[in-house]
Amino acid sequence: MESKKFSDVAAKETDEKLTIREGNLYSRKKDPRSEFARDYTRILHSMAYRRMKHKTQVFYNEAGNDHICTRIEHVAHVESVASTIAEVLGLNFDLTRAIALGHDIGHAPFGHTGETILDSIVKEKIYHDKAIDHRIFWHEKNGVHFADNIELLENPEGKYDNMHLTYAVRDGIICHCGEVDQNGLRPRTEYIELKCIKKAGEVEAYTWEGCVVKMADKIAYLGRDIQDARTLGYLPHNLLDDLNNKISAFSDHVVNTTNIIQEMIADICENSSPDKGILLSDEKNNQLKLIKDFNYKYIYKNDRLAPFGKYAELVLSELFNTLNNYYNGEDTFAALQKNDYDKRPFVKDFAYWLAGYTQITEEMLNRLSDEEKDRIKKIDSIHINRRIYKNLDTPEIYAQAVIDFLAGMTDIYATKAFEQLLKC
Image (cartoon, rainbow, N blue to C red):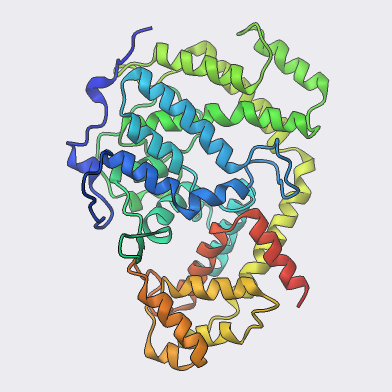
C-alpha cells in the first residue's frame, strides 16, 4: 500500500485562507501547537464537546447503560478513523483531528429526532411558516453557529470570548454530512462564505481533510449502531444471520464495529488518490450501502423508537413554549426573574446564560431587584463575546435564543428541566 499519496495536496498553514479565524484570537508565547492543533484543544475544552457524553447517538440512554454509544463516543470513533486515514495518506493530521472532534458540536439533544423537532419549531415560531419544505435547523449548520457564536472559552484575563476557529475547521464542520451516499469525495475549489450554505451536503469541504472526516463519519456509525441495536434486543438473530450471510459475499467474518472499520480504513487508504478522490472500492462501497440499508430498515425506522420520538417532542416543545412565553422586550429579564427559581431552576440557568449574549441596557437592569441587577451586571462584565441577541428587540430574536439554549442541552438536562415543569 502506497503511503503519503496526498502529501502534496494536504492543507498547509501557509495557506492564509485556511487559517483565517472567525474573529481575533489572543496569541500565546512559545506555543508548540499548530493553528489547527490549537483548534483541536479549544474544541476539546469547550462545553459543547463535553455535553456530547450525555447526548443520544441513536438510542435514548438516560438510564445510563454503560455499553450504549453516546454522541461523544461516536465522535471518538470518527476521530480515530479519520486521523488514521489522514496519517497514512499524508494529509494534515492536526486539521483532520480538529474537524473530527468538532463535527457534531451542533447536535441537539435526543439525536436526529431532536434535530427534526427543533427544525419544526424554528419554522413555526421564527419563520412563521410550517410549510417550508427544507431544513432550517440542521446540525452541521448549527455546529458552525455554535463554534462562531455560542461556545465560549475563558481567555487569559478571565473573560469569556468566542472560539474563533479557523476557516478550515469551520468548513469541515458544516460540510461533514455523512448521510448522503457518495464515493470518490473531492474538495470543492472555491472559497465561499460558510453562512451561504443552505442545506446539508450542498457542497463538499474545501479541504481533503474535510472529505476524509465526511467519509469517516459514515464508516464509524453504521457498525456501532448494529452493535447497540443487538445489545438492546432490536435485532432478532435471524436478521443478523441474514446480514452476515450477505456480507460474507464480501468478507469471511461477522459484521461488527471493529471489522467494518478496519477493512473500510484499509480499503480507503489503498484505493484513494488525488486523481480519484477519497474512495472506497466498488466491493466495499456496495457493502457499506448494504449495511446502511439494513440499519435504516431495521434500526432507524424501527417502531420501538416511536415512543422516544413522541417523548422528545413533548419535552422540547414544552420547554420551548415555557421559555418563549417570558418574552417582554426590555422587560424580559424582569419577567424571567419573577419565575420561582427554586421550582424552575432551568429558567434561572437560561436567564443567566442569555445575559452573556445580550446587550444589557440600563432599562433592563432598572427593572430588576438589586441582587439580580448585580448578578446580571457581573455576567455582562466578564463577557467580551458577540452579543448576538442584541437588545432582544424582536420576538424572533428571543425565540432564536431559546432554540440555541435547547440545542445545547443534554438529554439528561432536558428531561430534568421538563420534570421541573411537572412539579409547578
